[in-house]
Amino acid sequence: MKLSGNKKNGRFAHEKQKRQYRAAKILIAILVVILAILVIFYVMLKINVRPPEVNLVPKPTVSSVTAATEAVVTVDPTEQPVRDKTKFTFVILGMDNGFGNTDTMMVATFDSTNYTLNVVSIPRDTLVNVSWNRKKANTLYSNGGIEKVSDGMTALLGFKPDHYVRIDLDAFQKLVDAVGGVYFDVPKNMNYDDDAQDLHIHLQAGRQLLDGDRALQLVRAREKVWATGDIGRIETQQDFLKSAVAQILEKKNTIKLTALIDIFLNNIDTDLTEGSLGWFAKEFLKMDAGKVSFETIPAKYNDSVKGVSYCTIMLDEWLDIINTKLNPFDHEITEGDVSILTRDESGALYVTDGNWAGK
Picture 1 (spheres, rainbow, N blue to C red):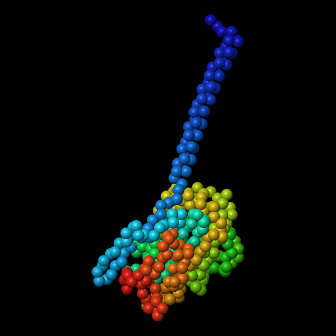
Picture 2: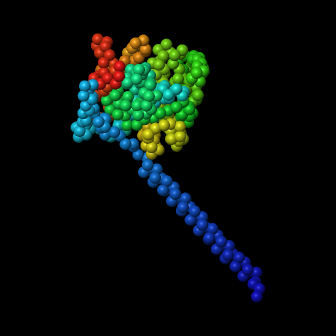
Picture 3: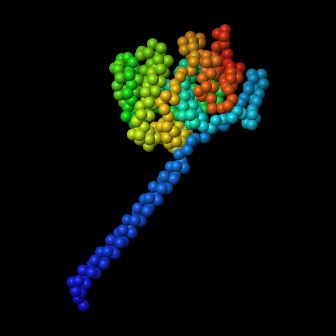
């Protein structure tokens, strides 16, 4: 039996409606799945973005070792000072070009209640209480990696830093490029070549936008550029970082945090998790540039021991900086809490806690 034209058209229209209905159901199902994935991703992101763990005691054990007995005295954890869990402490290392030493060393404390960030530079030549002959802070990493750096900074600070960030040359360039470069007033013409370190510095004086490559030239400049060597470089590094922080905070709404976190995860060595990095990035963008401070450990920068140049720490001034800028505990750090090799009032070398690591 043949269908009339009207019945054919009605049947085709009905089948078309059924196909459209099935297609709509499939589309809705796909959208629901996508929405569910996005919700799960958002929840996971919220769960993972959290502040990192902190060290609840200054040191796992507080030891007193004497040459005669080699006795170790451990302090009961209940007698330890109280930790402010809203303060986070770091060691920041900038690596040289493959020689194993650190080009830049900094210690920092971030206060997530008052939104302050205090950073102190440690000159490469800072005299440290270690057993090997070349007792410079920049040799800590090459003599034991991050663990030895942590030990060395614990001796200088009187407490163990919570976390570390180790940045190499490529990572620094990528970070500067990722924020769109940094405007900086280069203080003088810089022209210096060192093939051994693959270091080539050619910058003109004046305010200019520095990309990653030229920013790296600026912060690596030392001898041949600054009469004060490493101290001149530290001052320039701090001036550059102040400018970078201010400019990043000014354009925080246009910076892609995911790109910065990706650089950290893939190009920087750190014990911070992806969630912790995300949390710090979010908290950092709440800051005011005026609440970021940079200082250099107070020392006699032109000192020497047996003909080798060293920076010997000025203890009282350093303890004041530790307690006002860096200390996350309610206990004031004193001379007995640190193990610093320096000079006494008569100019003789001594170790603050009496424990010589080696002469």
